[in-house]
Image (tube, rainbow, N blue to C red):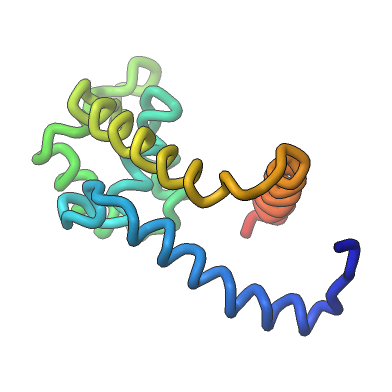
Length: 150
């Protein structure tokens, strides 16, 4: 180990291996996305709303980087599926907040349970040290990306 990769070679390797890894991860899941119940952006929206135990529509739009019309259709679908609910903002009566429903929380809990099973299978061949390194690097990449606003 301990070998470094110049930036161009790193990008080439990343572009080869990351799609294969993601296909394996997502291909093993028999979840609501794979079954066509939700689109990936709908899942991300539900996840964001649940993680914050409610959020404004504007906040969700910024996180998902979606146009207001797209966001309306996306949240309409989640409301129709009874996964989120809309309610007036307690601070600003002109604003609407989105909250997860019990059904939305159950759907996510089931999703995370299945995702954890897949992740355990994928990473069980690594040592504790290697898993720690992987998480530290992943966290660093995500935090740097978020700090840049990408």
